[in-house]
Length: 165
Image (cartoon, rainbow, N blue to C red; front, top):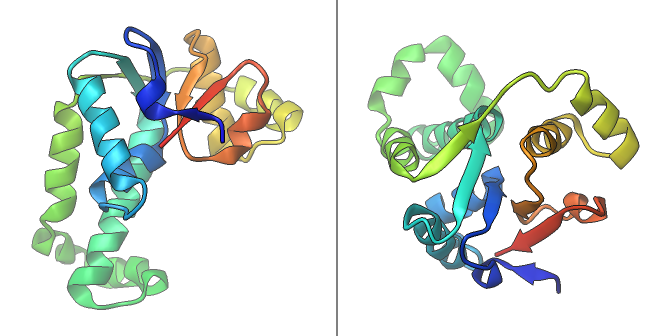
């Protein structure tokens, strides 16, 4: 079963993966409420939240694609093509901007920096895909060992504590 987000002790530092934000934003039937509750704990500074530009870019992209799909009634695989043909469609979106404003207002610290070639080494050593190894590199550089995610791939990293919704 593993570690659960509500059990993360007060005062701990924790890196937030994209799925935590996305489950909350999309009101996921199983994980939406636990993620919203956890983000509220971060915002109240009960735990110290960290994330990265990589994570937030992924969240932004998925929110944007989802709203294009919903607004223009296209399949996800055609959303990018529609945008390329009609970039002005972004003016008709609203949810993505509101969600990103909410995230921008959260009390989280954004970590970025030079992680190359560390993320390449971590990908090879830990058997992680590129973006996951970039997250791990940012965490490692900043001394973070708690990760809020629902991504089981991180469970094979022995020095990480993976906290799931």
